[in-house]
Length: 44
Image 1 (cartoon, rainbow, N blue to C red):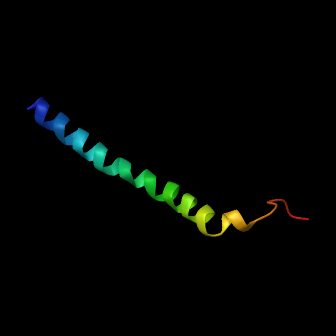
Image 2: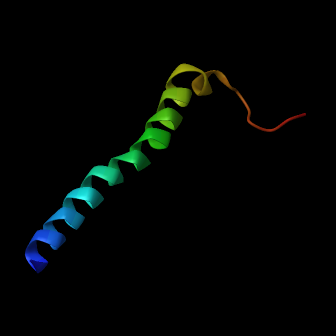
Image 3: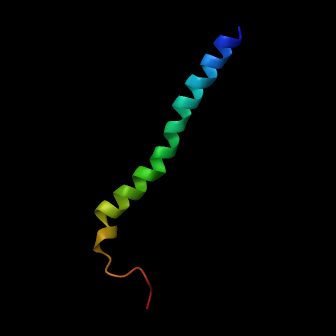
């Protein structure tokens, strides 16, 4: 029965690890749409 529990844990970890991609893709999307237009990121 240990193999069944381990297989379920691996499947859950593999599925839930995709959630980290959402903020990464959001950041890429931000720079693709708006971020490239900024000439300077410092406020004057």
